[in-house]
Amino acid sequence: MTIPDKILTPKIDKNKLLTVKLHLKGIMKNDSTESLSTQGTVYYVRRKGQFIYGKQNLFNGAFGIIPDEYDGFLSSNDVPTFNINCDKINPFYLLYYIGRKNYYVPLESLAIGSGSKRIHESTVLNLEIAIPTLEEQSIIVSAICSIDKKIEIETFVLKGLNSQKQYLLSNLLA
Image 1 (cartoon, rainbow, N blue to C red):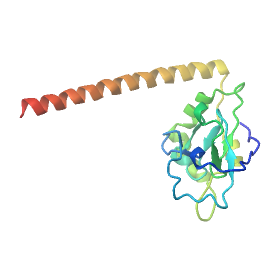
Image 2 (image 1 turned 135 degrees about the vertical axis):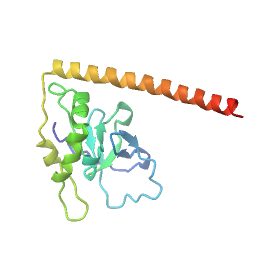
Image 3 (image 1 turned 120 degrees about the vertical axis):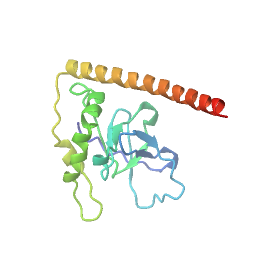
Image 4 (image 1 turned 45 degrees about the vertical axis):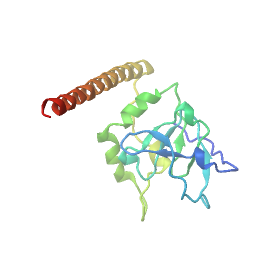
């Protein structure tokens, strides 16, 4: 990973601010901007495919890959990005690797600062990440994606069964 050029924006569009959710919940457009003051805060243009994280919450699972629909959106210096060298690492492999609780939670020990502690870009660049060949990464990603799809299907089935149960309970015990 490399630190991208810091592209400043001349005008801050509050409808194009990014936020990184905790607990691996991904990246979203920040909808809480009504009371947000942009005075004194520098915002940078972010690009699709970049790794993005919250300096104060990396160890709480606040990171992800910027999806296509957020290309050109903005974030402050507290939510930095990295360019991913796709010739060396599959972005999804990177997410799955870093997204293990036993990997990202201990990163709290690397946070520095007297008030709110942050994990700076230089620290992230020095993290140890096991990088197998791209072919092996693809196999790993494919296997995990298959499991994720199975979980999604089973969750959908479970919700349907719970609805059936509620229907039966309300009609049989009325």
